Image (cartoon, rainbow, N blue to C red; front, side, top):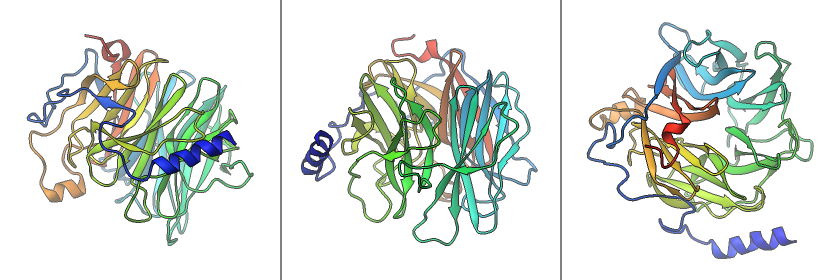
Length: 387
């Protein structure tokens, strides 16, 4: 009953999108210098290193999308969607590679193949005990609106995998929608993520108390911001913890070039209306998480326009105010031509995803939608207050 009263209150007070300044997160003013588009006036943190996970080269699979890292059994794994030429194709597959040091990577390994009339995309990872879970989004082609489901495979060595099985919701039915890579655990063990669901693609938080991440998923209650069609204004969520709260950040499809954010104080069951922050973005995927139990980070392309460069990590000691920023990859010295923007052939560092492992923040992303790179930076170099 308390949960229902709280959600009704949210509905009554959230009839319009609040203005910048009422968001649960913010950046300090003048943190970035937009007169320097290649770097935004930022420097690399000491110890920053970049390596290549996958080179398209003459490989049949020239298009790479959605690279997601995870640490398992002392190794790093990266999963991504691979296709011959474009992201939404029935010829796509899900590939992964692994590394013991983050510098040298195995050849691409097929995790999931496409089948007639079906597109597959990377759904990310979860680790419980000695088991690695790989999620795969299944997209039947020709359905309007798009309506996917989620499958999983498990492994204890990262090489041999079980057959794919459906991920189940709290009613025991296959989970409807596409899971957004980035499952994480609250302090009490509850798992939290987000899905894109029909009609169209509507972003919704999801949670489960099943530690394996395979069953029991339930939708959190969140009123999406007003939007012009069947796609929600909020897309591609990720999240971090802030004390007893969880903060979810979103790409803004309405081209404000700012990050949207919502907050939950009841373990992901109800959420505030997503509101605009003053943190710049590029209308592209961002990724958020915790460096420690108290400090948080956001990785994105804070260009303030469509250019997906440079790649930057913001940090906050309290999860409210992001007062530090470091360069991960620099970009071009000017905004690319419109044709290059559409094709992403400029120095684009797209769709970052992250993993904290053995004293480093690892960031994976695609470059020019073809190659996959990984950048790591020492945690002690980027925590808020570090010099």
